[in-house]
Length: 139
Image 1 (cartoon, helix red, strand yellow):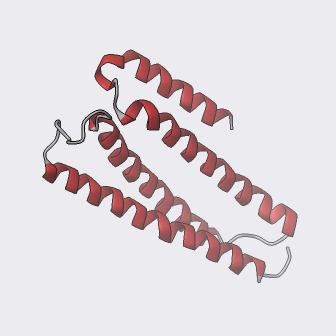
Image 2 (cartoon, rainbow, N blue to C red):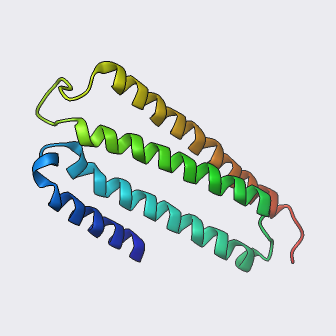
């Protein structure tokens, strides 16, 4: 949880240094929420991976854990970068997008969708790992 607070503070410092450039964009509002959400979910998953074998005395499958980790990290990285580009350019007061052409928005929308399509199987692998490990014998 400390990392979530520190990450949000660093994002605030960054936003304060470029205030004129990002004024009235979604970066000001959503930047901290994206950072805090990612840090919170990572912390919850870390607690599950740490406490599951200790509480239930059943080990989690290591290979499935690696698959879950890498699919999640790559998906979060791609989604965060697509979201930052959206937040940096989309202005609240305008109904049109004056800074980027429509084709660029479509391309970054494809990147964000690809990222979410990587995140979903990663979380399914996590659930499969939990169910598989519940069926194993105790340590």
